[in-house]
Length: 414
Image (cartoon, rainbow, N blue to C red; front, side, top):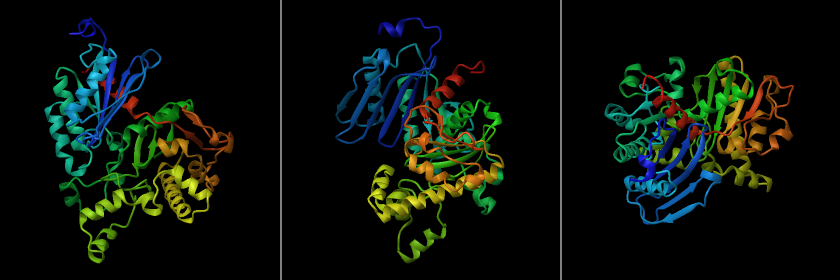
């Protein structure tokens, strides 16, 4: 045993956050006394011959990034490699300072509306949800099982992407299809990116100097995956993604909203299978389907060079975005702020400008100078006279997962 693992620690304050994908594991170790990151890293291409681990220690001013390329057979081997890297920095998983491991779980259905300590029953329910999250929940489950095997004595907490959206009223969550069929197959709107929407809506309230319960916010999470939410007094009342992350906004490779009959048309007329249509709508549509690029920086470069295909893709993207801003303005009745977050929302000033342009009658405006500023800090980019604040809030889903995990395991009820 190492010295660290035997040293008495009264109050463990560290949380390891794991985000397990089908062939990757992203991780961060945080100290919850101040939210400081102690280490971050990624294992990718798990199961391939050229697996890659990148680890960066951040204690004592930060250390050298370490990278190794070697076969990593499975998630168990990946987490063992992560544990070795952390131990090399004195941050091993056997440390008594580790309070819990927080897992990102994409789909929690209706049962899980809050962070939940994982036991066998919880894991079984997450498995039962695989049919509605076949691309994500299996990988999340694998990460959980592996981490539980490594530290069976440690609290493991699931933080669900869907949880923030469970406050949606039934009239917003239900599809207008036969109720018995919908209930039998769990068909309803669940929403995703919930940890981001929760974090950003709360930070916006702080920017405005108000309690979240006093603020109505439209949150626009714009990355390769994109979603909008209407948040009234800290509670989600509507969101753009649905049964799956395909519905809603135009995304990097996903179509967002389409007429459902497109599927039947492609089956009948093009002879496409359901699997082929699934790939089309999820991986070959959106911006990449419209213009061949899903990187907004490249699309803007092409627009500047006069590329009409890129211009049309951008215009379609913005048109859909404006429709959701307007719709959620109507749902909320009163809007205090519109917040942009995630990779595109935080970094693409032209997207923010175009999304708000023409909405002055709704009280929305962007100050060109403020919008052009690049900063890692949450900030307002609207002019002082604007009736509705426009904000840029860098999301921090890992910190949100860590905070929810730590609050749960240190609560008196735990």
